[in-house]
Length: 311
Length: 314
Image 1 (cartoon, rainbow over the protein chains, first blue to last red):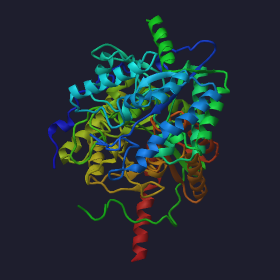
Image 2: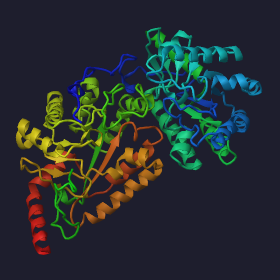
Image 3: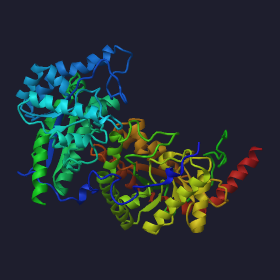
Image 4: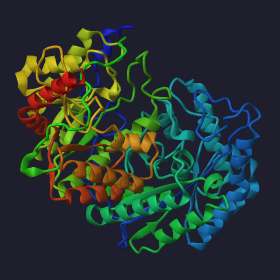
């Protein structure tokens, strides 16, 4: 089959990105960010709390880590549920032990259905980010805008009703979006989003309903990516996180503030044989004086203040 | 469809005439950073999907964008530190999108060669005329932005037709005679350069560009741990260095700024570069330099040896 002539036409072949969501710039060319108090590396520990429905529709693609067996896939349903009933409590203990201020990205349906868990998370003193409705309510290109608009609103409103502190951040299930997702987030008063993993620092992201800030939540260093998808050992995950931390800390000493965004999943790292690896990572991170361990919202505020000050 | 590729002869890695690299080096070492541009909303190609999700497919798109926004500078700084000039496999639309990167690369006297227009536009389904136009566009774009006469080719996203190598050789000859279009990185059959037959009969070679050492293959396909990648690179080098006593070998590390430059992988990559460049008999070069040296000094003797071995086998 020969292709149409327009396969060799390039309408966006010009300066900058091939979309107008944000300015093209290299990290090293931007004014350096300062975190204050002699801290150079901000560390955001993000815990994703997720509900994977048993009757997964998989529309328009199967969410990674979701059901893979014929219905009813008890195996994956319960392994994921494990995180919300067992794994998270091991994580919370670790956070307490190492004095971590956590950030919880939670599916709103899960938040609605687990009031006890929500109380415990509130007690841990962190911040809540809306992680969509559940892991089978994906946001995707070609999605009906009315349908997506209702999901975003329901997710954000539900979580806001359930938590005391403001809900300002958003993480899409599977970090996937439609062409309209950023506008819908801005419309619902979301201030920052974590989906685009194209930077190591927050940056301004434009929508037709006003600006958002993108807070890239790295995928490649996640427990589910390294241990779950790549099948590396827990020890290797620890080594890789430490290598990333060391590298960013050094870069932050010469180039200005940097951010390590570490996303973890209690259904994976909260297993008895893995939780020690999380503890080792947290212990290592917190033993360095140049570290500012903060929530996503605190890092967002610090960046926003400086960007405004510098005009 | 052909049963066999048929563009090079069987030529055993055994009793070959000695390849001599400059200053008695055993290994010609080159690093080929792929600097690619993937589109957020690429046109559909019925033969291959660009992304697993409907556009905008953020998981794949955004990490590749990370490579240009963050990763490139990291990798370039590291290559500077070890005195390595990259040979860039370039999605040439990057000249228009991100000229700052092209400028930095040119300041360092790096080589740029063609990796198509975008890494989301495949060769599959193009007519011969369309493929010729695409390849010619890529050579002209590199020349317009950098003054370089493109010597090498790696088909976009490793998508080929039966005519790809012929068309690249011809486009190079049409535009710049023998100064352009004389090596391909698309063939993985050898650890030394080898002659490749092309339609216009020019001197044309395959340059070893090891897919096995390619960071995307290592990390994304074979899912190797970063520290083990360093071990693999060192072992690969050690063997080629040893064998290079008999006849010069080529080692290439093909990289991607969205793989090797991630914070958790930089240490491993640096360890390998430090190790390799710490050896005395290594010629750190560009793809073009290696190809030119080979064509000038060893191309004819290779052809003669191939003919000789064919005759003896009969």
